[in-house]
Image (cartoon, rainbow, N blue to C red; front, side, top):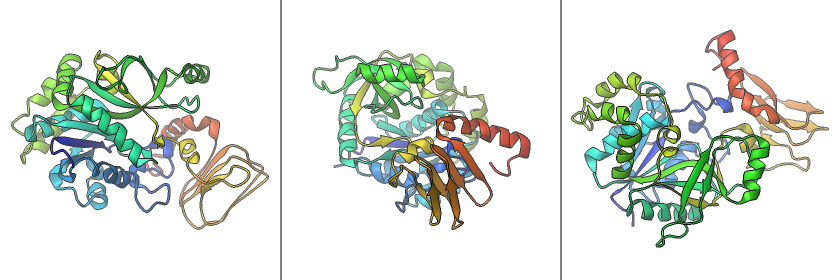
Length: 363
C-alpha cells in the first residue's frame, strides 16, 4: 500500500545539451523516447514512482518553457503539481521550492527527489532499494541517496565512497565517507578496484524535516529566501512570489550545497540496471548491436568496415558509413553530428560554440 506521507519530486528543467542535436531547448531529452519504448523518459519516471507514491503526491519541477510539455505527457498531474522555475538555477533551488510547497500540505512528508531522465531496467529491485532508503529516512535525521555499483571506470559520473558501518537495524544502509566529482580514468579505475565506491545516482530520499534542517545549516540564505513566501505556497500568488525571488537564488547543486558538507548522509548500494542516459555513449550501452558492435536507430542505416559506432537517425534518410570506428553519428532534419565517442564530453562545448557562431537556431 502506498504511504500517503510519501512524496516524489521529479526534476525536469534541464536542456540535456550532451544529447544534442536530438535534445533541443524547445524539447529536451526528458521529453523524448530514445529507446523506442513508446514512453518518453519523463513518462517512464512518473510510471516508476506511482508504484510507491500516490499520483497526487508527485510533483514535477521544470522550467516555465516546458509547462505545456509536462501537462501533455503527464495528463494525470494537476496544475498545482507542476512547479515552474523562471530561470535555471541548478538543483538546490529546485529542491528548496518543492520542499516549501510540500510542507504546506504535509509537514510529516518523506520525499524522494529524482531526475526525470534516468533509465531503470530492474524495476522490482529499484523499488526494493527505494523502500530500504525510505525506511531509514523516515526514522532518522539523515539524508539518503541510492548509490550504483560501478561495472566500469566511467569518468562521466560522480563517485561516493562509503564506510562499511551502518545502522544496526538496516546494515545494508551505509554511511557516506566522501563524495568525488567526475574523476580521470586512472582514478576511476582505482575506485572500481577498491570496491569502496559507488556511482552517485542523483536520487535522494529524506524526510521534509531533515532536508529543511540541512538547508538551514548549509544554505541558510536560500532557506530564508524561500521562507519569506510561506503565505504564498499553494495559493494563486505562488508563481508571482517564485518569479520575484528566483534570480536571487544561489546557482548551486544540492550535492555541492548540502550533501558534500553534511555529516548525516547515507547511501544504499544498488544494482538495478541504472543509467542516467547523460550521453550518447551511455545510450549506446543499452541498445542492441550488430556483430561489429554498431548500435543505433534509423530505418536505413548501413555501416561498412566500421565497428562500435553509435548511430541515431531521426527520419527516414539513408545514412551510409564506411571506415569509422568508435564514432557517434547523429542526424536530424537540420543537423549532422559526427564525433568520436571518446570525445563525447566535448559535445556540450560544441553546443556553446554553435550558439556563439549561429545564434539559437540550432540549439
